[in-house]
Length: 621
Image 1 (cartoon, rainbow, N blue to C red):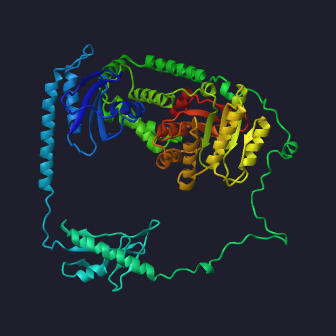
Image 2: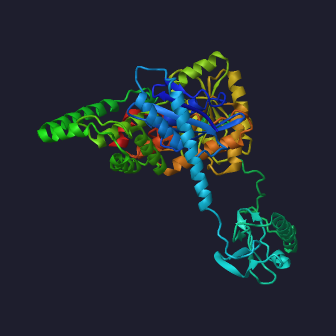
Image 3: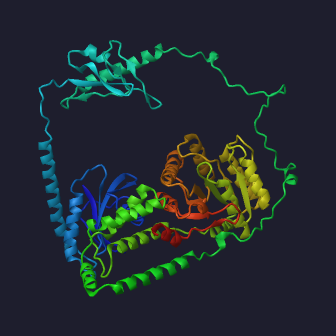
């Protein structure tokens, strides 16, 4: 059953809703659709799923780009309504004929919608009946109990000598029953004792005519489980006493070290051994104003001037032809060449392929049916729409002013906590020190927390940065629980009056479940104000996999009812990519989190903000 259908403008004005459809919707599926899909340039998707307490909805939509209207249908996800797409198209066609920009109430459309709905439902019912008539099985003269047995051995598909099991041959069926067992993703193959094939890890029983006795199938499954147990019992177990254990290498006659943690306490003579470098290395690039946008504007003005001169050279016939062509509505076939060229250009800039494809689909959905302006080419219209979409994606939707949040946390008598997470070797510790240097320049007291208790040398690396910047560091050595270390660091910062705690964590791959579980525990136990994902600007398609799986793992492994995901992105090694800036777009598009910092060098001052105009200009250049 259709739950709701509504029509609204791109500005958010609701023009019409169906009053006779069901009760009020649970949750806010329309608002979520607008925030998560339409504003994020995901309008090229076929549908959108929304989960609410006690309900699960599927939303479908279509646009009338010339009039600026959006048509949205909402129905229960469990129902597969075949007429929704057809109904939306009919409603769009009928409503566009009576639409008046000066009108805001369309009560007279209720009867029209009722007729359109009945027509769409009747058409879907006829289609369903026709499919049932065409899909009737044809009898091939075989018995209903005949089942094909297919075995796999050595990767080559082999058919058993007695591939068809008849109803009367129960014993043969039981002997050749395929066992349904898995061991760490490896399918275990067991030879049939009669030599009639190979018993596989999955059932591959295919009925010839679509019928099978359920009771007999349950008996076969129970028989297969028993047989698996008997075969497993016959496997000889390895004697644990005979297992060869790896021994530590002894280089001389001295006794072996009982502990591998050689970290010296922070209060020993390390400070005398290292020359302290003052933290005054100049102004951080975060506070410098960039002139790239003005240069790009000058270049754009030059391009416009060149384009106007080129138009002036054209003859009057070409101008008349363009003015006539400008009145035509854009179709999908007109947009395809320009979209394909734009997709290839984005992929050459290191944008992930699936992201570039979704962006082009969204731009096509926003332009299809729109009237082309006079003296305007299709390629320039597509590029302008893509530029607008990229600016909207890369522009943060919320405030990313960390200094303001720090002062707000200070008024609450608590430190502002930032957790740095990411994969191995992306530069978390180095860029943590850059952020600390930037905060010090704004007269903010900072404490570092060495919660990377996994990688050898991680504590010493962070201690070196702390000495150079002359800021305190909280450490507990190695082989400790990072969640507990972070909690104790926050408590220490509260006692000492530190305004910001920067938590360094161990690098971990997105598929490493034990380390991801430890990270989820750290975030849940300490509830940081900001979770920063540190990623390289060098990655392309892997950026999508990293961020999506990080968010997915944090959501799956969280023990809190309110799931905490990535809040912001710190993009590193930005000075090594030239014009391959697509990783920034891929990361923001996948996570919805803004790029808050950009690392562009090896010194403490090499940290800056993301220039959205410069990125968009580089992507479309």
